[in-house]
Image (cartoon, rainbow, N blue to C red):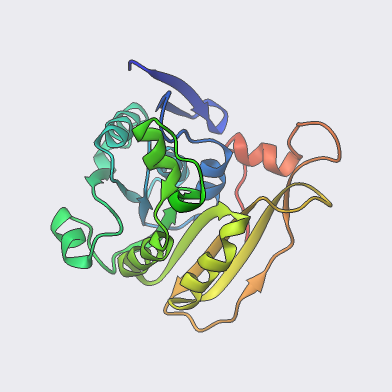
Amino acid sequence: MENATRDEFLGGRIQAFQPNAGFRAGSDSVLLAASVHKDSANILELGCGPGVAACCALADRPQARGVLVDIESEALEFADKNLHLNGFEDRTKTLLLDVTQKGSIREQAGLVTDSFTSVIANPPFFVSSNSTSSPNALRKRARHMEKGELDQWVKTAAASAAPKGEIIFIHMIKALPELLAAFDMRFGNIVLLPIAPRAGEAATRVLIRGIKGSKAPLSLMAPLNLHGKTGREFLPQMEAIFRGEGALHW
């Protein structure tokens, strides 16, 4: 594909074309996939970009089917290409949809309510009014959302999840107050997993999981550290996840 790179994930088990501009999957997408329950049967990825998180989740779950949603047709072209490249086209579909749209529009586009055992998302990290937008339209859409839209993403995730289904987002740590408020209104058994570069350093990312219909209380886990005290090498647990030989147990 033109204006794209071909990248490897899970130690080469997943191949993915990614645009030079726009959302490019990396470690966050792999961690998001690794956080999905091993027995999940129906996985929805909101704001899928090139579909790397969904592909990584499907790689270790042969029983699972997937739906990938994005607002950008170009992103879905990459996702379709990558699903085919990795042999997942027979158990997946992609939908062109703005996830902040009201329920009737989502259903008309083919996003069925109350049906997914896992809903995952890596939403845009920046609020347009609080940051400098990229001049590239595709990159801007991938990296920025309007104020208040994060709650709409969580609302759509809640509507799409099956009863007792899990909803998992990964985001910047500064978004935690807004993210936790949106989850707390809709889910129980919320688990927070901070992600830090190394032990003793402040967390920069957070994984948050809620269960639809649960009344269980919130849990805060010890930080997940990526690297040792020095250097950029991943800790053995993290290296195993990024090579597709491990999973997150939380």
